[in-house]
Image 1 (cartoon, rainbow, N blue to C red):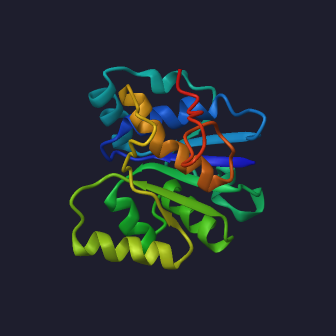
Image 2: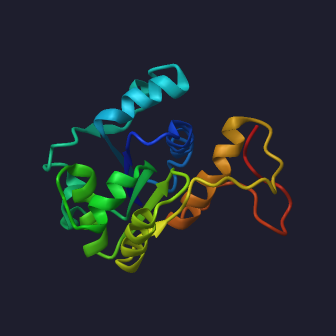
Length: 191
């Protein structure tokens, strides 16, 4: 499976961190991981997480204006685009068909190719405009996965809480990552 990950400047950098950390453990299921960051994503990460660990991931990072990235075309055969966290501005541009940067172009490609587009939205409350934009993306084939954690697994840390969302994201991609499943013994993979 080939996955592109886009990280926007919405609050919720912990979700991006947990996603990137978990993807590093899934080499047997994921053959390629490429990243694109919005301008504000780095700033928000530093503010919320207090570090620059985003520099330490082994993935190929593409400039947000570089349309030569392989996932900017359907011919590259990427299986999924995960936007995590996904700002409402990004959702609005996707819903409007505005491909003004690599993130929105990659989303447009995912939708037109009928590939997985998973938008981990992080906003509250939603305005009617947000809801309509999310409906438009859903109607076009995208998946809206709000960054709304669950507590069935009795998470103990902030990372464990974030993983309840990321586990769902990975499941939506078709990746069998360890984690809590209702009615089964707790196998969260969170040590």
